[in-house]
Image (spheres, one colour):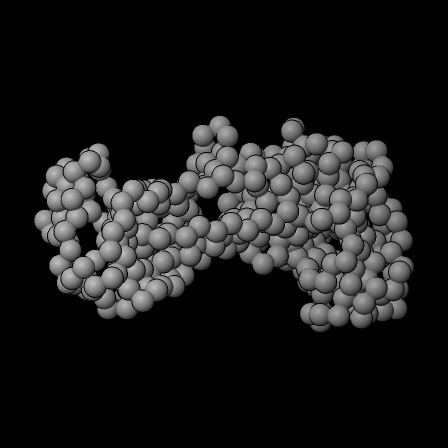
Length: 365
């Protein structure tokens, strides 16, 4: 058990028993090396301390680490020579080093933390090894891949390497240029990945909503919700999702009935089994270029007057999904709309002035 950081200048021979690091690093100097390493003898990273050594070129550098079980990492660095520190911990956190513990399974119950002394310049291949006892009960071993927590999410590589070995098992991932943390998952259920983008922007009194997913699992559809006060939300659109994928997908929707002033949007995702998740709220401001229209009486039974229109301005009435139900051209500054034939409900009046469309909500009682 280390009581302080320790440097090995010659050969560290692992034959029997464990070296427990606690909060202290075990450093293999440039003149040193490691011999051995097995389930009978390894470096136990039971806290914040890690095993550090130089990695350069195609030579595979073994980091014989583990916590309760032997789960070593092997690193080949084809970039600039650098010292790497490796430790392994039990469990996987949703935020890599923070967040909640992931309990959904479909993974190896370990996180490998890999750090380089000088950030940048590395191009590495990382091999991770684990045992049957380290796997969750629903882990699909034949679909295993190494996931890296980067850009605030657990990612998925485009190419999945073949599995090698039999208890212990190993898989690798190449082309790594940034480090810490890593985990092993399967492509049946990728590690939970938060929505990577949800962005509403206002143009010409319309709000374009773009969002991006990094992976999806049994995702049925998205619901876009809007609010005038950030508290009470209404559903304005449903967009089908991809389903199950480990690739990035981009989505968009245009709210042609954007509210004047500041409005709020959020995204809700629904799985095939009905499970839902609602993401953070984003705000956007649309001012309709200070065009003022007054519709009155509103609500009423179907006879509206619009004050502020100009001669020739086109007016359309659409339903909640954007279907045009009525259209006319304004003849003066006060236009009457007789829409008694429409059913009770919420509709939108769209007024086009010089290419700028202003939308107002009306209610037929």
